[in-house]
Image (cartoon, rainbow, N blue to C red; front, side, top):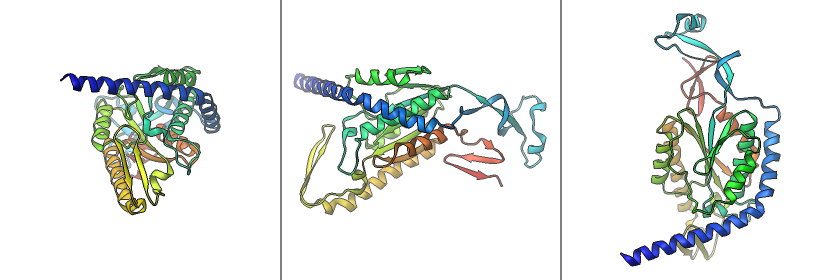
Length: 320
């Protein structure tokens, strides 16, 4: 038993040393990432208003089903006359709630090919920082599981950056286990190359309380196009070793098939939970992803009727 313990201790020491070195390197690039995040956030924030939630307000927000026990005066009879169900007309409310952000900082996120200007880690952090800035500006609270408690402070970027730079623990790809509020939303930004069993277990745990979530897969263009040929050594960045291909181009078809299958399995899981799944390449503008995320975070939950339409996970369809 002793040799096993000794190897485990050495692994922990190496992981901590590696994390410390990565933290020092990240500290040097952090000012640039924060400036970029603020620039992008300002672009997205321009013209946007607070996110709407049902409550006391003046503007129409959505219709929802009438619940047994509610006062009959709340029924919208005009809307209910078009259906066999009773509906209540809800007004909008500028409501603050918690959004948990998880930026994957595991070793695989440091990859950057010649096809992209940013590493996956840099893009992941810029997106997380910019999204935090946008959400706080809209009156929301944001936090990082196990690292930053939910806050609506205007200096949220400084809090997040400081916590990340000083975190020298081994960095997992997926969020740690925690129990978010049923009213919270979760945004997981990762390359999602973890085994599908781990992805399923994590998403199941995060959604167990009823929290809604969004998953974003950050990938380098080389991870999609596999632009390799000839003799190439592929090194697994998280300690699983390496493998050499004599003719790398012969692996392309099988690689693309495996990637497509892995993504299909993730999408099946998120669809089952009512979560969203987005793929973002680092050679595309970060603003594209942020605009899409902002729209999804501001959307009503699946099953809500919005202006005569029934919203399903990932789409809006007319009621029959």
